[in-house]
Length: 446
Ligand SMILES: *[C@@H]1O[C@H](CO)[C@@H](O)[C@H](O)[C@H]1NC(C)=O
Ligand SMILES: *[C@@H]1O[C@H](CO)[C@@H](O)[C@H](O)[C@H]1NC(C)=O
Ligand SMILES: *[C@@H]1O[C@H](CO)[C@@H](O)[C@H](O)[C@H]1NC(C)=O
Ligand SMILES: *[C@@H]1O[C@H](CO)[C@@H](O)[C@H](O)[C@H]1NC(C)=O
Ligand SMILES: *[C@@H]1O[C@H](CO)[C@@H](O)[C@H](O)[C@H]1NC(C)=O
Ligand SMILES: *[C@@H]1O[C@H](CO)[C@@H](O)[C@H](O)[C@H]1NC(C)=O
Ligand SMILES: *[C@@H]1O[C@H](CO)[C@@H](O)[C@H](O)[C@H]1NC(C)=O
Image (cartoon, rainbow, N blue to C red):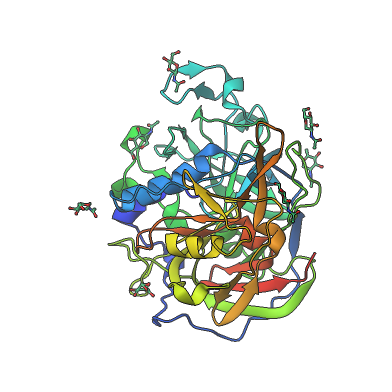
């Protein structure tokens, strides 16, 4: 999930003190993989929910804003999903979306006002949160942050605004004191009755707190970037190593699945307990130019966990597969790759995928071509099971399937491509927020 707040940052990103590391090399640099120790804190990921419509439109809007002619829309499937974890804030526990594609941690405030997408008041159930919200008055540790506001908007019209505060936040045994969080009291949300907010794990520059009491006055000029949860944890010495790892299991998701008890791990400070292969690489996270918003190694600012990637599959030599604007996003189910790459790959299914209204459909029993993602000179394979997803049923009750690899738009520097859960199911992704490097480790087949 990448938030529209980032669009503001494209115009004028403010450099936060944590992100001064620069990568001078132009080409993807391969370094000896860092040996990642076992994690200090591990939290199992226990359930997921249908993905929210806003996810794809957020990213679409990000592109649209970056280039007004780029209207590529990210398609998703009905049975897309989110990975959730418990979070405890001021002693109150909620389920939130784990998102490497945004940076704010927020839960709705108890008594929040629900609105529909055009700003008309609705009953709170319409917003579909999984709880009544966070009761700031019942938290002995909550402190308001006066005179500022939180404001996140979604391209499809969803938005959250309201106060900001500080409280003790715990995820998987890792506790941060005085963590800045959004506690929106105004929400236009199309929830599903499960999550109550979001845990943003990306960089400080794309946080959405503004130096104004009036959320409608949010702008780049008054953005006050702050340290997201994991950045605070590192600064406070609550975790020894400055990296976190994500393991997202391929779930047994069927049309009727709403809960899955074993979906992986979020691990702070090291590796989660999963079986891995020896294939691993440590590569720089690609930064962006604060002035143009394009991938850049000069005066780079960091927003997402962006990788320099290439792809290998039958026929891959016929297209340019190298791309330096591809993010690893736990909040997106499918891979969204450059038009030519997606086309060339989808033609290799037997029978070939069909492109209809922006989506590649495949026979549910199609033969899946091999696919691997190259990062820093290493190759990480994607299991065939991740490349065909049951999407819906047709009029005759037969399953309709889509490809795990979809068209993410023309390959321009301002288009953000996504390696979603289709890729992340196959690796342990470890993000180092101090060195601005990611270590990718191939998982054993499971
Ligand atoms: C959009 O396309 C038009 C016509 O092709 C061109 O004149 C204009 O410069 C483009 N705008 C952007 C932002 O690329
Ligand atoms: C998450 O929190 C709920 C409510 O407190 C609890 O029932 C559940 O066991 C927790 N799950 C995990 C994995 O800790
Ligand atoms: C919001 O509610 C108003 C008043 O009922 C209605 O006119 C409007 O169409 C609704 N908007 C949406 C997006 O449903
Ligand atoms: C959030 O900020 C934008 C400007 O960036 C503004 O247009 C919008 O109205 C704000 N949302 C709310 C609910 O105030
Ligand atoms: C899913 O639920 C529907 C409606 O309850 C039911 O008809 C269908 O058989 C279920 N499918 C599976 C695979 O359990
Ligand atoms: C990103 O890729 C484009 C196209 O290959 C290239 O022009 C640009 O220099 C690259 N940027 C960086 C920072 O590597
Ligand atoms: C694949 O499924 C289609 C129906 O969707 C069927 O006609 C075809 O025979 C199946 N092919 C194989 C090899 O099972």
